[in-house]
Image 1: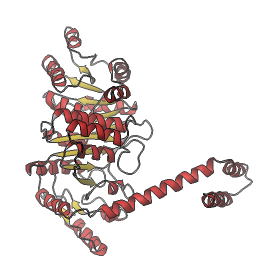
Image 2 (image 1 turned 90 degrees about the horizontal axis):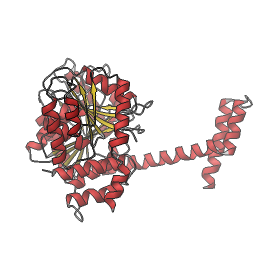
Image 3 (image 1 turned 30 degrees about the vertical axis):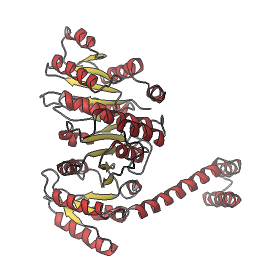
Length: 307
Length: 143
């Protein structure tokens, strides 16, 4: 059980990070003080649940909460929903499926709007996970926005990643093939009472065989709990295996930082006087598009070497 | 930073179309709206409000139970030592009860005739007037 006051302070600390009022470390100090975990190194297992929109992620998370609580573990949930890129508003509806745990002091549920982030999480999600860990929760479940092939930021956050799909999502295996296959520790075909569930599972198993990783493919019906015990067992095996994700999390982090740095360098060139001159010539039809690209790349190369 | 609002629907009436329309309108006004579904008890509402650390809890009631539900919500917020979340009411509420609700700390009461524009303007107003200043709160706690 996590005391009400600690939950309140955790909630406030998450907001402070979300809104740029405290740094992650500043917020962490607050939560540690509130929870009395100063000076102790706490570890929570972080379980990511990701997959396309409408696959039943929230309902499955609700079932996982139930199973983890039955085993005596306290659970924090960070559920991310998309922000509108136009108004920046968001409707955060994941709690609806988890409301039966509302009275349980061993469960903390926090919705987050993805804000400007495009990776399937919110900018403050990773800090929120650390804060929940410091508050004393044993497990943190992170539910991403409904994702396609490229929103893979969960890799940098979770120890175990569950990729959820459903049968008859058209070419559902195709949609999860590119990115999600590489990050999955466990595949779940949810809504397994629907036609095509077995075929989807078989497709996934073929794909897994090619990857040479040990990725169970399970079928669940989250609505009535069918298959959830097996899923929980698979999750616990992955948890017990230590830190299988550390290497890929670091790989992901390095690639992302390199990409961020490259993007920043490119923007700096575009904003520079030299870059602006090229763009002006493009606007005046003095340069073709491809010549403008070449000219800008040449400037960028020069800038990178000058560094 | 966006205003974060919990749209709550207590009681037994099974209509949440209004609440969903409100949630979408607030989103379109740039707010972050937590929606928790039907049949919420005051305990569930307060628990969600605290965990989500919302600026505003908007409770929509059509059933006539407001004089039991709002005092309970205000009491639970006090018990949880949360004094900076603004509570507002909407729905079908008799004229006579409005001063009573205000007296226990409900900051605004919208009747069923209120447009979504009225709601948006009203929420922005109560947040400006009664809402927390998160930056100031954190600065005060640091001292």
